[in-house]
Every structure is written in C-alpha cells, then in structure tokens.
Length: 313
Image 1 (cartoon, rainbow, N blue to C red):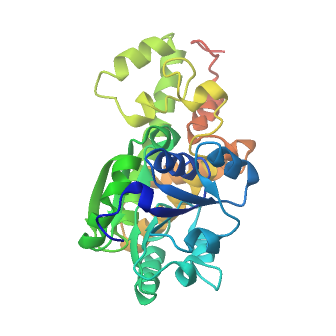
Image 2: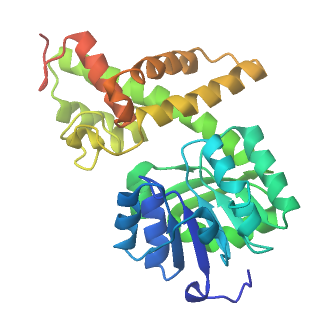
Image 3: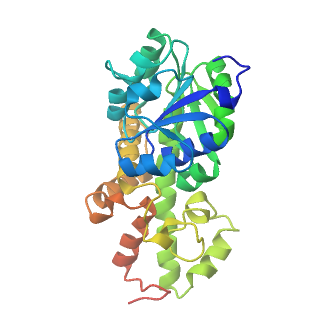
C-alpha cells in the first residue's frame, strides 16, 4: 500500500466480526477507512453494517482489491480455512497487500501462514490482542506483533486506531508466543481474583469494600479492575450481565491448551498454569462454556458456600 494513501483511499477487508472483530472493524470504519466485512453469522454482519462497515458475501470478496486484510477468528483451523484455497485470502488479495491476523493460534501455525503469505507475494503479521471486548470497543487494545520490522511499521496506522499499544515482539510467531504467555497469566489472575472475593465474602467483607482496597493495593490487576468477576464494583464488567459477552470460557480453554502444549514442549515448570488449565477445561464442559471466563468465580463461590452480598451459607 502506498504510504501517501488516506483512510478514505484505503480498503480493508475484515474477516470475523464477532465480539472482538466486530468492534475493531467498526472503529476502522469510523476512522474513515473503507471496511469490507465478512462473517458467517448474519447478526454480526448486520451490527457491523449499522456502524459503517460494508458487508460482503465471502472471504474472497473481502480480500479482493483490499490494501489490508485483517482476520479475527477463534482458532488456527478457521484461519487456515480463510487463508487457503481458491476462495481464500492468499489467492484473492492483491500482491503486496498487508495481512494482519489478530487471532490467537499456535506459534508454528502463525509461522506457516506467514511463509505462505510471503510465497503469495503478500506481507503478514501475527498480531493477537489483549484488552477484551471493552478494549476492542474503546480502541484501547494491546497488540503483540510478530513479523518483519518494515511490515510492522506499515501496519502502525491501523494499530493506532484499534489499540493503545502495539509491541513488536520479534519475528513471525513471536506475537503468538507472547499472547500465550499473557493469557496463561491472565487465567491465573482471574481465578485468583475470584478466590480472593470468595474468601473476603466468607469473612464478612462486602464486595465493594474489598474491591476499593485491592484495586488500589498490590492485588490490583486487569482481572480485578476491568473484568471484576462480581457484579457491582465495575459496572462495565461481564459480571453485571450474567457474564454475557466478553472473552468466552471456551476461548480461554483453547488458549490455555496452546500455552500448556508449549509448556510441555519446552520443559517449563508451570504448576499454576497447569492448575488453571484444569479448572477451565472442567468449566468448558458445563453450560458456562459460552460465558465470559470470569464466570469461574461462580464455581468458586458455589464450592465455597458463598451467599451473594457477603457471608457464608
């Protein structure tokens, strides 16, 4: 893409308009880019259309004529399906187009997609995100980016719209490596925050009181300040919507599976990571699988005999 192009002259194909991709595509459209969006869920497409995204009927249509193609998909298998084949991104994006994959996938998968893109005459970055649906909506995501330095520089205008920070983590696959480490830590944090609330409640401490102290003390973290697992203290957290939306248990379970596979492959001692993996594997087998991963608090509270509002049963 020519560096002198304005947003209005730049076409972005966006594939995957779900909880994360939808708000990202909308923010790019609001910034003046021409965004052609595709998703297999009609409701997601309609919501994006209402906010300025131009719907298209296929992956091939999203990629055709695009200066940039951004993907936001649940797993590497779907990324492969979108990238490969006669109707895929690699076969239909113009030579020199920039591909930014914001999905969280296996490190080796990301490297493979990058190599395939280069062979097809395209530029590729793995750029998984952190910040959740709130960050996607507000444009405050953090991107962990793997790829060539010149390609990262070319992607800077889009990262500036979508996030508060984009860190070049290294060569292809490095963004995914950092994301897997980050999400293992996040899972541990979210469980720890849930356990702390349960203990505070059993000790007779009200949720708001514990939050007011911990959020300003050494226990502060994103899992508390933004994704607070109890309703009340953080009005925007999924806990206030019966854990609807947000980052689903199923996705956290998937990311932990990737992280723990890397743990085993590299001989890392990660007892808390393994414990978190078991907890989310079990939770993923329940009706909570589609809810935000902070719903883990409800299982902790139930097993602890917590009565909402503080106290013990």
